[in-house]
Image (cartoon, rainbow, N blue to C red; front, side):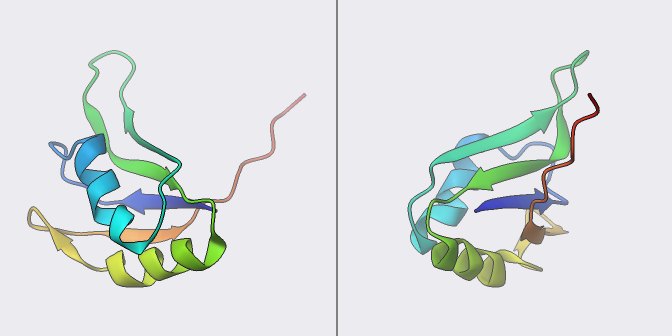
Length: 84
C-alpha cells in the first residue's frame, strides 16, 4: 500500500521519513518529492509498505503527528490515471 505524507518540513530527509514508518512495518520504498529545477523538497512524499495492515497502522499513528513544527497529513495514495 502506498501512503502519501503531506505537510513535511522542507528539511525532512527520506531517511527520516523511512524511520518514522519503519516501527509500523517493512518500508519497501520511500521518496520525498523534489522540485525539478531547484532540487528542494516540495513538502510531501510517498512511502510504500507491502502489508496493508502495517500501512494502515502507520497512517493512523502518523496522521496529525507533529514533526519539526508541522502537523503531518497521511493518507492512502491514489494513483492518477495516465492520459494515453
